[in-house]
Length: 151
Image 1 (cartoon, rainbow, N blue to C red):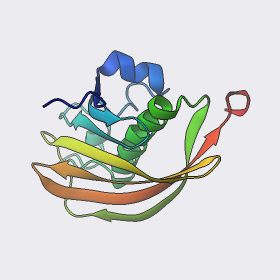
Image 2 (image 1 turned 135 degrees about the vertical axis):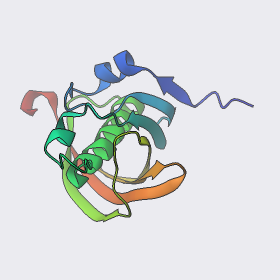
Image 3 (image 1 turned 180 degrees about the horizontal axis):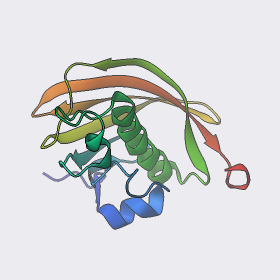
């Protein structure tokens, strides 16, 4: 049975929620979103990603910081949609980032993020990147919400 609380979003709907754009937009589609709880997004890595040209030309690998950025963007979508946040969710801290194996062209990244705890202007989120059902990256984040007039 379909859960009526789960929401799917296409790229145009994603662009209405977060400010990142190509070549720095790392979410292609929202597969599942439960407001104020969790999100699962898709990012397909192609050989045409700009960072693969220099990291590394003969053995392209997605930089770990960009994998974390993809996780952060998924979290920002969840925060913007689920809580109607006005302003910008900024990374305050990245904790316990673990990289199990490289992310390479052709990989389909399934990024799952979950809200663990919320305070007034802080949100604690944890998540993982799966490739073919295998954990590639795990990490925890603390986000701060910057109000629109200061963003």
